Length: 347
Ligand code: NAP
Ligand code: F7E
Image (cartoon, rainbow, N blue to C red; front, side, top):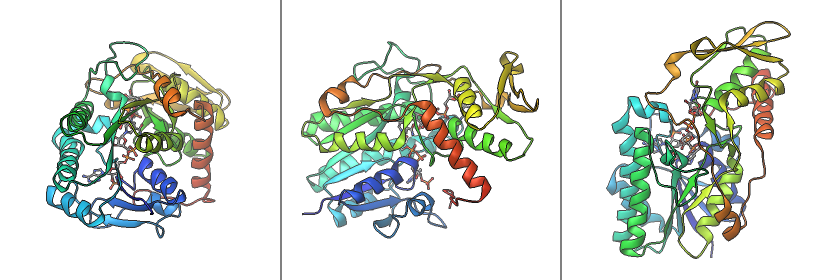
């Protein structure tokens, strides 16, 4: 029998890759998208799967809508990826962030319990929950120390999933995923902001990129690898949470430098603090400058994962290192600017 799967946040970076991967494996994919004046399906269209999956416009912050969705589809698996996922925005909009990131999880779990559906539920937890880290590297036993409304909403959702598993024996797991990027990454996140900005500069534009905290270090992986990890977690018989990471780190500055080299620049960094900037040694043009508006009220300075558990239990490991990811993103952004490729995830 064909397995039915619901994916929320289906037109996000991970949602789109996940829908594509699930469809290719023969699942009946029900893609859940938020209602708006226009339906945003840009990534699903780009991956050429829009006609292969079922699209549902549902407000997952509304319990009745979630009940109706689950009742009508009766899926075997639910991947809950919808979120206000931009950490910086969570400081400006903490209530909206909590509503989507926590209430929707409560709605899903409560509806599954009430309907008594035999379903495996996946929650998109995050390395941001480790926050100001309390041990290094971070694994499944590392205590949380969240530093933003986003991270706090995700911690609450994480504990909620754990509680439904313990209290009601429900099949629900959380993947604690470290940062993962790709050609389909949103432009507000620093990696894509950098690669799209560098492509713009390489194509002749002269306005420098403005960045915030370049000392920040992250464990960056490749999104298509990470959606495979999600599926392994959902397919496994025991209900266990897993860290998904690459076990390597780079600073924002290091990511910028490798991306600038991939775009054909010769980056030279000078100055410190707010006076830091990066020049191209060949043309003397400014590639980036610091703008304090991109600093966060409280930032996470360092995250490094340990993926031993998922490697040992489920055989998962990352297939892309950061220079390879950066090069893919730069090439993609250069193609978009030259017009040889067309993609707009905002529609
Ligand atoms: P993303 O690209 O921002 O996608 C999030 C999706 O959620 C978008 O499609 C968005 O819809 C949807 N959404 C936002 N508000 C909604 C609402 N009120 N109702 C319904 N849908 C809503 O994020 P991502 O990178 O794919 O991440 C997927 C999930 O993993 C998120 O839960 C994120 O918090 C979590 N996560 C991400 C990372 C990472 O590094 N990428 C790491 C750990 C955890 P629109 O398209 O309409 O805006
Ligand atoms: O920031 C610094 C910024 O916004 C990374 C989400 O997917 O991963 C993501 O959250 C770092 C931060 O990602 C700029 O201060 C410097 O320290 O790309 P980001 P994030 O906050 O790590 C986690 C795992 C998630 O769960 C989230 O959903 O880069 N930084 N200058 C900047 N960041 C941005 N966005 N823009 C800058 O100009």
